[in-house]
Image 1 (cartoon, one colour):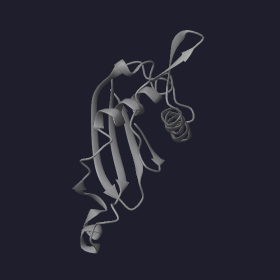
Image 2 (cartoon, helix red, strand yellow):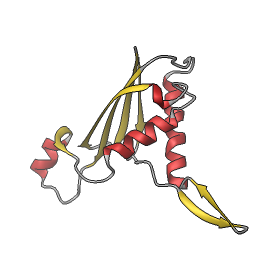
Image 3 (cartoon, one colour):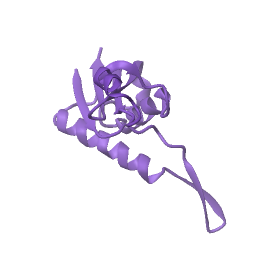
Image 4 (cartoon, helix red, strand yellow):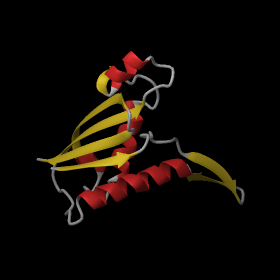
Length: 137
């Protein structure tokens, strides 16, 4: 089992962008998405420097903690640290899962098709972050 945390506001997978180059359309990943994928890779590599790729099925749990809105009352803020209040705005869980799984291809596992089960939970905290736990079977 490997657990690691990526500090900062969690980011969902951005949609691919298209640009015209020499009469042809080319597809590219937005810079913000590519940068966040690299951050996930970095923190995974620091947590498991000698990791050997998993060959079998893998379960992934993802906890995404976002900034507490400034408009909240002090009482609500005191209750919010953790998962007491659910984060039900964007980014969607599926985009958070996608950026995490895609970034770990070839680093944690051969391909994210090996992930047989995923849990993603969004909440609020005073220190925004994404925590990922990976368990091989």
